[in-house]
Length: 113
Length: 111
Image 1 (cartoon, rainbow over the protein chains, first blue to last red):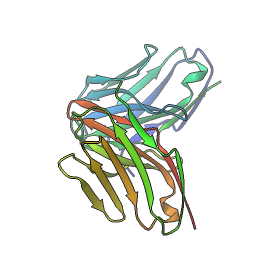
Image 2 (tube, rainbow over the protein chains, first blue to last red):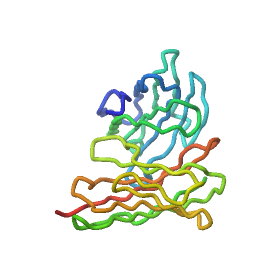
Image 3 (cartoon, chains in turn yellow, brown):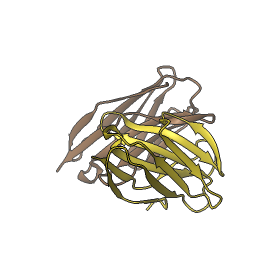
Image 4 (cartoon, rainbow over the protein chains, first blue to last red):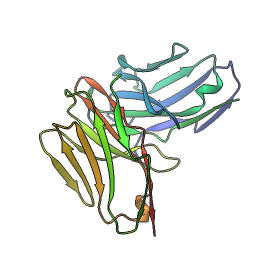
């Protein structure tokens, strides 16, 4: 068990809808990362927060947004969903800002129908 | 965008054999090269990592070989076991760089 908790495990929704994915990092970790995993694209980095502030941005669509709250949990908001957004979304956490080991949650599987 | 090229996409090995997965990176400023193991339904888990100041790191049956001049690194799994069957991801990054992952290698170890 990595100590990173993601909810929900599965999410099925329709095109055009909005969903929120939640992540609780490992105790003591200050950084939260969001990744999207699909069969053809592998693990794609979306965004990183460190202690409540956005630290790095990757291939995150404008329809997606995230935030990290004072208690360090994070939420990833996906709106105007398209079929192509169907994927596994992983949250990871680490202690520092840099490359301290990433600890991944078990992901949220999003299916857009 | 910096890429990490991983090969092969899939690998079948007999129990007791050696599994070898290769990765190539682009940015010479990268200084952190981890390997992650992912089982179905689970998130990736850190397996072993290396910094470029050494050419090899061994942890149990898992060894990373690192070739800085060629910008390549590889994972060797000695005495492969059916329980090693999983998807393996290499990654590269640095203090000021996010981790970039390879596309993964599906390893199957036949009993």
